[in-house]
Structures are given as structure tokens and as C-alpha cells.
Length: 341
Ligand code: ATP
Ligand code: MG
Image 1 (tube, helix red, strand yellow):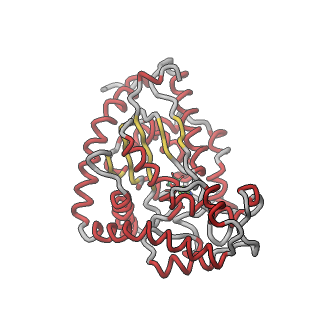
Image 2: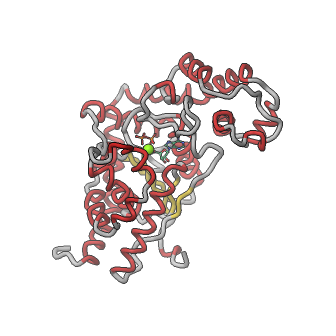
Image 3: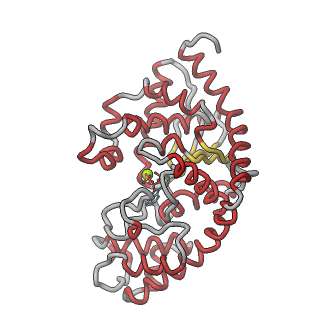
């Protein structure tokens, strides 16, 4: 990225209001967003990506509430609307406009390689929405509309951020410009892929079928304790070294979650709990999760009681986002050859 210096150091990331926030969203995404904001080295832009949510059916009233809930989750976790730009995607129409242009840049063959589409569509690929298939082009637009240089995401989104780079490169190449940056995915921390509590081969998702497979950020202490207690594990105690977690996905997941919540490394967690059985480790993990998530969910509930204030924050964020996005969209249209810009 020899040209990187011409782009303002800028972070963009988003979360879909496709359900309640999970511990996976918190450890893989939101906690990292707060770290980037507080580091102060980059402008930080965070988005509730409601246009992405409707790639699968959303009941309008539920989507409405979930959008505010995700915004409340961001703020309660430490996103400060003064330090970061926080808004919901549909309020900035430039996302959809640039998304269309990128749909014309991206190749069908690229989309066919997206593993998340294959996972989500499953055997049902003929029946899912066109939007679900095309959504990585809209995601590229979300990022490149701000010329974002860094995108903190969980491991599952790596392929889509790489596709964003491919789209930027192809656009720059086809139009003979150096207009869009090559954005870097940033996948950091001990819990970049939190797994489903009932099936260690699948990631934890807010849209997953059963509530028992995930920890919601709004779960109360008793629910958190119950879910960890029932989490699937093998019968072996925790190993003496990190190596001993190989081929033990469920055990590794719980250790990674403990590390993500405590700020320790997985190795430090293993050292502390070497040889411990699940009867000891699971209650300790539940206690730690309640200690970390409890204050956040209390604050979320307080914020949710005043939806007008959340809406005001999102509207203000959308104004700020538009100021950055509009000139970039206008220039894109000019480069493409559209009349009137
Ligand atoms: P859905 O099931 O609707 O896709 P989701 O839980 O996967 O919901 P997204 O809105 O798709 O959430 O993703 C928001 C952010 O959270 C992304 O950066 C994604 O990588 C991250 N993320 C999602 N699930 C996990 C997980 N299990 N572990 C770590 N990070 C995750
Ligand atoms: Mg997802």
C-alpha cells in the first residue's frame, strides 16, 4: 500500500440488526471497535447495517426495535457518539447507490466463492433472496464509501473484506484511477470466532436457531449460568498446555471466551485452570461473563427506555456520515461517466 498515506486513517465496521447482540458480536467486533475508538489513531465510523439485515426476512416492527437495540449495545459497550460516528445505514442512501455500482464491478464468479452465502443458503439456494447473494458488494460499498483503511471484524467476515479489496482494485484498474484504498481486515484478540455453545463446529450467531447456542448480551445472570452449564464439552479436564486444546473445539471455545472476557491470553487461562474440570471452569466462566456483560445490559436497558435519544444520536451520526460519503459518491459517479455530478 505505497499510496496508503494519501488516505485518512479511518476505521469502518458494522453490525446487522438481524437479532439481539451475542457474545460473539461483543468479543469479535464491538469490543475491538471500542479499542480502536479509544486508541484515537483513526477516525472511527460504526454502522447498524439495516439494509443487510433484510437480506433475510425481518418483521418490520422487530427490525425497528433491533436497530435501536444494536445502537444501544454499541453505546453501552463504550462507543461514544462524540468520538465515533454512529448511525444506521439506510439513513445514508449513498450506501445503496455505491452498492449498485460495485454490483457492476464484482464478478459472479467471485460471489460464487463466498463461503458465508453457501452456509446461509444451504440446500435452499434457489429460494433465498438475491440480496443475500449480492450483499458482499453492498458491504464493499459500506467500507469504501468512507475510503476506510481498516475494518475490524470477526474471522467469519475476512473473506468479505478481501472481496472489498478485489472490488477496489478492479474499479481502480478498469477506470485507470487510484481512487479507492486497499482496505485491511483487522482480526484481533483471543476470540475472533466464538463458537456455538451446542456445536463447536459452527460459529455463534444472533440468527442461529436455538437460544441455548448463544449468549445474548441482554441475558440475565441465571440464563448465562444455565447456558454455560449446558454448553457441550468433552469429558476431559482442561489440559496443562495450550497444545492440549487441539482437536477439542468446544473446550477451546470456552477457554477463548474466558480469555476474551478477562483480557488474559488463552495461554494464561490454561495456566490458571490447568487440570480443572468443567464443574469448576464453567461456573467461573459464567461469573466472569455476568461481571462483564451485566453492567452493559443494564445500560442497554436504560438507553432503550429512551428511543428518541437513540434516534437523535443515529440521525446526527447519519449527518456526519453523509458529509464524508457524498463527495466520494459524487466523484465515483464522475469517474464512471454519469452526467450531472
Ligand atoms: P447473523 O447470524 O445475522 O449473520 P451475526 O451474529 O453473524 O448475525 P453480523 O451482524 O453478521 O452478526 O456480524 C457483525 C460482526 O460480528 C462482524 O464483524 C462479525 O465478524 C462479528 N461476529 C459475528 N459472529 C461472531 C462470532 N461468533 N465470533 C466473533 N465475531 C463474530
Ligand atoms: Mg453474520
